[in-house]
Length: 71
Figure 1 (cartoon, helix red, strand yellow):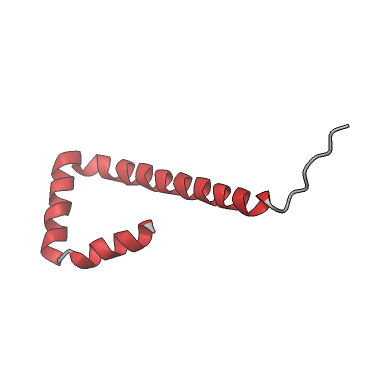
Figure 2 (cartoon, helix red, strand yellow):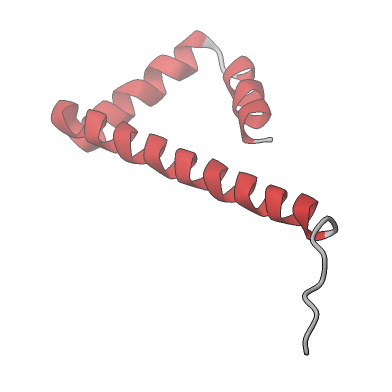
């Protein structure tokens, strides 16, 4: 979902818009902070996808598990 939304946004923006956005980001964060910012963004996206996959697998496996019998 996120990747399709990101793809749509990228296609909707022209090259001039992208350049303006990149210049603004460069001015706000500086050249040294951008790699750190992107690394944090990538880590956040990775953690989100891991959590999403864990929830999905738990939901899929919920019906397959046998209930525990109590004595």
